Length: 206
Ligand code: SF4
Image (cartoon, rainbow, N blue to C red; front, side, top):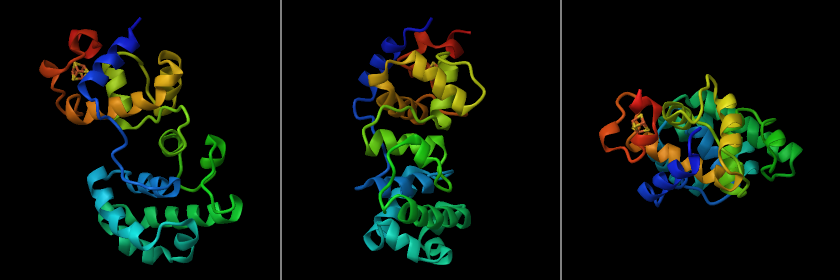
């Protein structure tokens, strides 16, 4: 059995500034930034949203734009056609079904077009301070390599992590695993020699 608290303590020492790397001021801005971040870097998303949110940053404003107009603004984030469609439809639904406010439950958030569990968990934990573990590609890879989980899907990973990690550490552990995945436990070539948790890692020890 892994001592998950010990692993998280070491990651906290290594990444004292681990936090959401998307820039936002409101829950709605974070929701849009998270939709834009699919297959795109946070740096690129932050560049785009800096200009975008200066012009439009409410569901009412986005609901009135055409998909083409949104597409023009977000083109450099990639997959811009499908992202514009999701942003437009999600904005419309927030206005029509939720009184113009981003809903605060997983169940309601995942009714929005383009909002899966990961995006919903990111919004819940960062914008609303709920305890949640969003599982993205980094969290999935890093926790499987360490051996905290042995899973095939993001959803299963989330449930196993919720059992393995104390609830008050769920949200922050998401940022720690992402920081570790981006900086040391990289997808193609993990830098195990300089890794602070190698003693506790199955990938390294097997
Ligand atoms: S030892 Fe290597 S595989 Fe394990 S967590 Fe560290 S970088 Fe990742």
